[in-house]
Image (tube, rainbow, N blue to C red):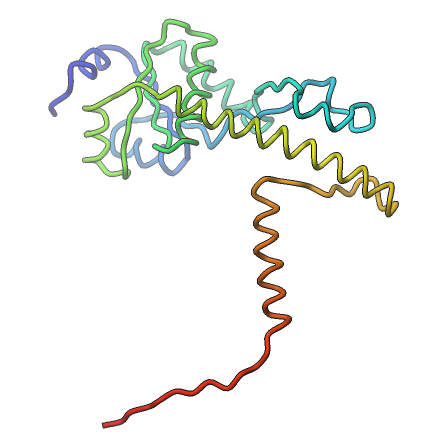
Length: 222
């Protein structure tokens, strides 16, 4: 197996390989070695506790409210596993999907691991398919994770949270006062949700207003 100088330095140490999905981890483990894996995003964005109360905070302030990233409940076991395992290793290879979300998940893993081992060497494996040849090619051409790509995902998540939370609270509280419906019912708003809802309504109206017309076709037999 031909390896780059970067990989030659890595193989002299114990290396923790972390994938994004279970099936990817199992496939890579079957092809290369025994590894551990995380599943999807480990963290999510949320407001600080001071802005969690709907009744005590004006929805308008949510546009500028501070945001924090924290480990999700379903990822606490993964966080513990990473922190426990990474102390045994000198390097970390990120095998998350090679798209924006995957890059962001990669940095979530990096941040967790570096919180207990700051001198950890970090490498990024880039691949388009999970096959032996592709995995070997990725190992032979290890790169660095792209922080700019990850930051773009962080910005998108923060914008979605600021806008979605502010408008969701505003319209829910407003409509509750107007129509006096169950206070537990939420009228949500989302930057993707509303355009999607518009497409659904548009299609529904097309079906409802459809007027039958005769159509003709020509059949030729030989």
